[in-house]
Length: 112
Length: 114
Image (tube, rainbow over all chains, first blue to last red; front, side, top):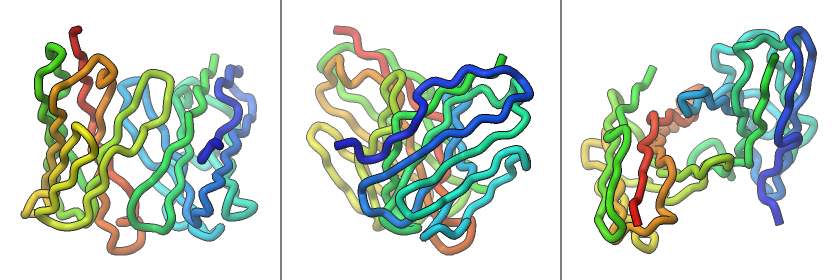
């Protein structure tokens, strides 16, 4: 059974388009995250939700909007995609706000 | 914000050798985590550390939470080809607000020559 899953695995789109990435976890965790990994493999937190409440919102353009319909799901919607948005986006989850985080397989977004 | 310095940036070793990598922080962390990332995959948690001075093993991997709470190291003994990958340290203050976020090191790329 997949613990943290993301769809799609690959996403190729043109500048200016709007796209969404979905994440689901079946671990029963109450905290979920979105990370961005750039071409140099640097991992940076973007957002975190705890029990559907936004608790971490790093300096991310307004074009990025997370949505958590329930504790097991966290989606990321990106408007007006730009070339610089090309990266791998990882979803993660944890039992609580503190401690071990478990990552999904990633979504490789390529903006052309 | 916190800064994590992870070293070395890359390592090339022979199969069977031991490996050591470390992370130092500009601020105190209450949690240290070590991850491994294979190409095209998400980071996989290797070891979690929660107490200063704690030494924890997971098979051939051993990690320690530094006494000052500003550093951690990871050792891999008797390396094998499947140890190849990028190893990340991550620290968490865990004291509230955005301090719950994980700050990641820039990774150590490990190459093992058979």
